[in-house]
Length: 562
Image (cartoon, rainbow, N blue to C red; front, side, top):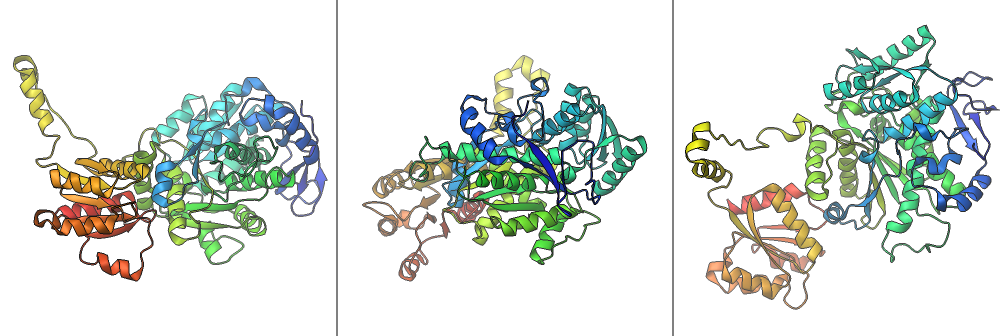
């Protein structure tokens, strides 16, 4: 049983009353917009006493969820997802404190598992036996799994743009799938009318108290995990203290906005309990082809104009009309921690999927990659600073990888006939394998005294083509490698002890056979006017660490080679 009391308060008239799952509006004024409040001093006492003994999952924080009784048999291990240090991506962006909240590792591989776990638990507590929802995919999958465990019949209204693989996954749980040829907003209207006619429980998104409250657990986990994940020099809080650590920025892709709305409430409650010392800025990222919130934010509007015909392949983020959710988000972001709304194109998103997979080993769905593409954009704009602590929500996994992401030519076919296998298997196989290697493999030398920087550059090059790569950790070692076997391209850092990059360039000029090798300078150094003039005409390209994308470097190398 819950050890704390909670109640709901109307956001329009201020009326307070007990929370009931089946009561969808304020009993005083009829408003659908209400918010739950808890006895925070009592919750803090319980947390300090009980959290050390509890497992690290969503229900660890059950006193801040609108559930009277925790039902362990409904749980599938939701919450407690890893907070991963994005070392390679952070290095590329010049941000050493970049973290990824890996929500792919939930029971159905998306952050919507949190929402489904709490919402279905609330329905079960209220004896709901049949429910209706509209979804662009992930919500329906998560709710279907949890509804199956709870014995609740579920109707899911999905737009025809939802990938067939996701529709099949919804159906395998026993959910009744209704495919709507129309937009997501039209699917929501049909679902609401269906629920009204049959008097069934309707999942109402941001108006659903359990759904919003579930997203707070992301904030709780991040604040706890950051306390132990930051390097000691950046974490001034003693591990023995009860205080946790909030990031400077929380970044998430957004469709309807329920995620950041709940996360912001979670950080606010932690701040009110004195467990964190600030509320982070919130960055909401939308797909460019369906970005009503971004357009409203940039136009300084309190109400978003609906997008009637979304133009994006990222169907999971195709909420054209965010309604009052945007208005609440905007008000609270301005009032509390500040933040930003930004949009990215489908092309930027697909490019970022490749970057995440090749640099961090994370395969993400396009909706999750939108957040990363947006974060990269905010770094480039100077809105997020390199010295800030940033957490990006990796909201879901791509399974299978979408065709639009890979495009053509992502695999090489090898055809070995039965005759070849039977009569001369080695020759036939080796002949096919020889086609995998280009006629001339280009040679590259990387000269950088920082091991992590060399590793990142090597990984970028390996992900972009077939190269023979040699590394040197000092200028003198680099000169020796170049003399022994002149490469096609040199990637050179300027800031090295003893023989720096400028000295390396000077020595190369002394050897006619080496002076013409293209040099690409990749450096963290802010060059003076005089230093820039020294490089003029002597290097093929100048790139600053933290200010280029992986394929920008590959483009420069290929241009230098050709």
